[in-house]
Length: 297
Image 1 (cartoon, one colour):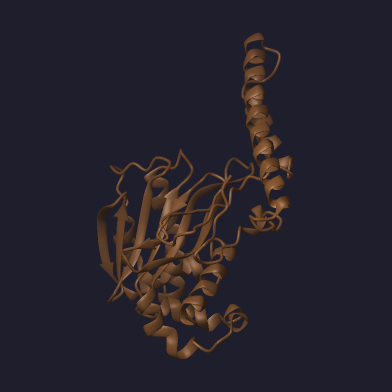
Image 2 (tube, rainbow, N blue to C red):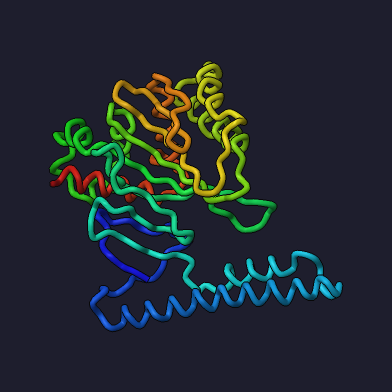
């Protein structure tokens, strides 16, 4: 396990947060690193053994089919002492940031000047079982735009003042700042139709919240970009980028699938990730604090 330094401070989601870790130079850190490695190895071995034993038992009819999968899930969700997260960070800000139990990697910079400000997760309940991570997302903002649009107002504000300020987030969403939300698919069975339906619900509710009920055509223009012909296996990347002039540009695995000029749509998209009721509250806090860090430099 490797532990370097982040260009910005990122926090783990509260439901998966690990205890604070001593510095990499301390002896306790080395011991804990070995312990985590051993624990993770043991976890893999346990699941493999469970699968093998259960597969054999299924052949003889002694246990229900798929029992081994439930046992594996139970092991992970009940043994809190086994960390599900790896926390890798950067010594060089041009390197990718890895911060996920699944090893999801995010570039620290997009389009030369959009810096990674926070990483979060979209979680959904499946079949009434535990929540799964559908996708991880990274929120980026253009360094120069942030300073130009928000520097005068917030440069002298402390981190604690910004943390408590709702107006700060509103200004980040409302101002014509180049921003990108990068989604990386984690759930292997996710279909493009599911993505389209999810955006119909979530973006549709925001469009109605900010613009009233007469925005069905705008919603349809956005969701129609996610055509059935596109495949999104695990690891696929969807980017929702707000360009200058409030143009929302959508790409799937690097291919642009559409662009729409609409301040309302841009606001509705960003509200999902850093608005009043975001998908991941800790990611929103990270974004606020890291924007504050940019402004204070």
